[in-house]
Length: 192
Image (cartoon, rainbow, N blue to C red):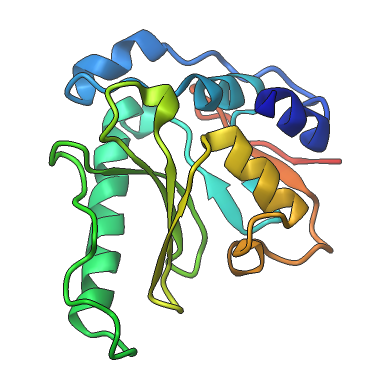
């Protein structure tokens, strides 16, 4: 149901992205496989940017393929750790409440914005289609858990039903979404 809801919000893509060899991900990411709704999103729309600000990572062959998710994890971990080491708010703990991959059940980032906010999957459940979305809002030093998966989260984000939508999305004056790239690394242009 959430796949159909998100497709209705985004509309039909104007191009068909190159298909990702998803079967290769487990060998690169220590047995992890990506959630089915995320695979659908990337296979249907590619790597995209919502409201010109919030990006959804997609694997690209020329940027390391699935191994690039290790780099995304390292970058996110560094930003999160710095905030927790030097918090602005006294209630911010000195350590994040979650571990990052490669720790068992750790966080795996799949999107974010230019302000240091990230969305992750909490990979503790052996069924990747049951991974909740964990959100990190850097300016607020706030962690939040969204109980649904990728497409449910994105639908709630776009419609404003998610209570932190304003923290993650750019202005409504930007196109709803833009194609960024696909598995072959092809860039895109705004899609109305």
